[in-house]
Image (cartoon, rainbow, N blue to C red; front, side, top):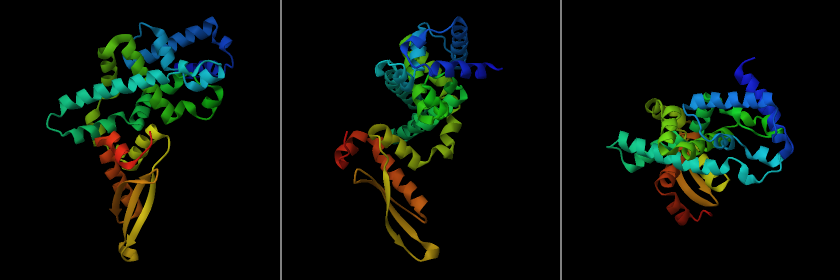
Length: 275
C-alpha cells in the first residue's frame, strides 16, 4: 500500500471522529500523521518549526463542527491571511517581471494566477486533499476533491507558512508551487473563461452568482446577433454581443470583469451591490 493510500485511510479515520476526545490518536496514527506532514512539507519545499500551524491549515470547518469545537479553530482565519500574502507576492512578481505592462494588464494576469481554478489545480498537484482533516460526511460527498475546499486550504497553507517563517518563506513556497511556469500558464486559454472568473469573483464576495439575460436577437436565423446583459442584484454589470448566446455572454462577462478588477469598491458604489 502506498503512502497516499495509507494517508487517506488514516485521515478518513480521524475525519470521522465525533467528539473532542477523539483527538487522542494511537502511536501508530501519530506516526502516520507525522509521515504525512513530512511528505507535504517535502512537496512545499518548506519544513515547519511550529507544526500546529500546519495542522491548523489542514483543519476544515466540517471537522471542527462534528468534534464540537469553535468554528474559529478551522483553517478559515489562515485562509484569510494566506489570500493577502499570495496577492502581495504575485503582485510584486508581476510588477518586476512586466515593467511595461499597464495596471489593468497586471490585474488581469494576477487574477489568472490566484483564481480558485489555479489554486485548486496546485492543490491537486501536491495531493493536498489527502491531508485535509474533514468530517466523514464531507469526505464521503467528495470533499477531498472539491475545488473550493482545495483552493481555500492552499491559501491557509500559505498563511501558515507566513506565520511560521515570514514573508521570505511564503514567497519561496508561492514561487515553487504557484508561480512556477507562470508564462505558459498565462497563455492558457482555458483560464480565460470570463464567465467562470466573473462568477468566482462575485460569489467569493457576495455568495450568489450573476445572472445573464438576452436583451435582443437581431438578424435572420442563419446570421443572428445576440445582445446579452450580465446582472447582479438587479443591476447591470456589463453587456456584450455575439453571433451566439454563449459568445455574447462571454463578452458581457469580460466587460463586467474589466470594471470589477479595476475598482471593485467603486463598482459596488455605482451599481448598488450590497456588502
